[in-house]
Amino acid sequence: MCIDLRVMTLAIVSLFLVAGREHLAHGQEDAVIDSVRTSSEEAALAFNAGKVDDLAAMFLPEGELIDEEGVVYQGHQEIKDLLSAFFEKFPESKLAIDIESIRLTGPVAIEEGTRTITTSDGATRSQFRYIAVRVKSDSGWKIASLREFSDDPVPTPHDYLQPLAGLVGDWINEGADSKVAISYRWSEDKNFLLGDFQVTSTGNPMTTSSQRIGWDPQAGNIRSWLFDADGGFTDGRWTVVEDGIVIKSSSVNPDGGTASATMTIVSVDKDHFSISGTERIVGDSREPDFEITVTRRPPTAGK
Image 1 (tube, one colour):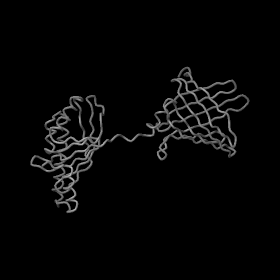
Image 2: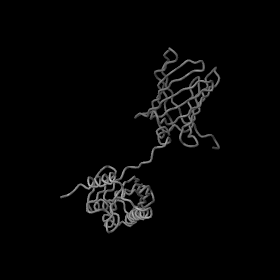
Image 3: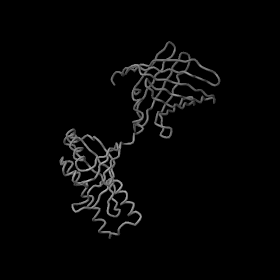
């Protein structure tokens, strides 16, 4: 009769959690942990040498490997088939194991850490967290169950801002009675986009504004703060949509009045994008919609 190994392992672990761990002298426990660590290091050496049979033999006869998608491979033959298919597709791959902890619970050892697989050119192909349940046998600590979990790195604020990377550069729009100059750049730590705006219109002094765009981890969206030289400021919440970027903005004017608008940015090509404003409310008044197209400014001579 075939006993589900996961049930058996859980039963063993539960039993010893209730009964208490078998007492080992400090030196004895260290020696056992060293032995488990050696078994794990031998598995990495066998993997790097492409020794499929040796790797499969490091599992119990009915041992299991559960991949990051939850697919179970049980027994030596299924594990050998899996490894053979892997090495056929990714020859000369290498495995590095970072063991974070080894805990002894009665007759089993629970090992946790990170497994990183690199391709022949040194590029990281995959990285997984893992938990291995090992059982002592006459030939070392065999794997009863090895489970992998996806360990993708947590995205950085810079990663979240990548949909806006096309804004970086110097841009200009010149109309019949006004001129708008826009410049975007990454902050030194690459976690924010910094924008500078200059608006010049006939009969009025030039106005300037500075903007900081970042990732709001609490709200889970892109957010911007724009500060005008005259004391006004604007808070914007950005949503990346299929055909562009939509910004819901609310402003406070220097006199304490408020305004709101929906701004939409659409890329025309790598050297042009359009900016449109709709649903514009200033105080209690509705303002007309507008749309402008900005053009990438040619490099200044000598730069």
